[in-house]
Image (tube, rainbow, N blue to C red; front, top):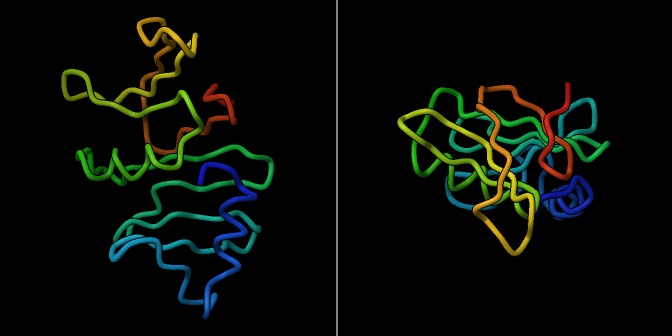
Amino acid sequence: MNTYQDALAKFNTARNKSDGKPLASNKRLYQRSDGSIEVVLYNTSIVVLHPDNTLTLNTGGWNTITTRKHINKHLPDGVYLFSRNWELQLGRALNANDWSRRAVIKFKDGIRIDSKGRLVL
């Protein structure tokens, strides 16, 4: 689920929308007042999917394998969050057949990307 439309469709299946839609025992979907859909891991909003198909990413300071794994599940194809020398980076494949060719952005909480993994300013 890496598009706003997919997230909204999934959220709309929630029995009680104010309680969110469970995705896992520790992860839920909620709809914000502006219409965007947020993925909450424990108590941290890790991904916000906006109606314009951009995503806002946040670790909440939890630079862990688990947090990265859950964020990566919601990123566009060919985009991934990884750690290099204890520093988070966002990678995007430049060629679907060659992962050695990639664009890398230094990650910081609140970063916003488009559906191709490009930084939105």
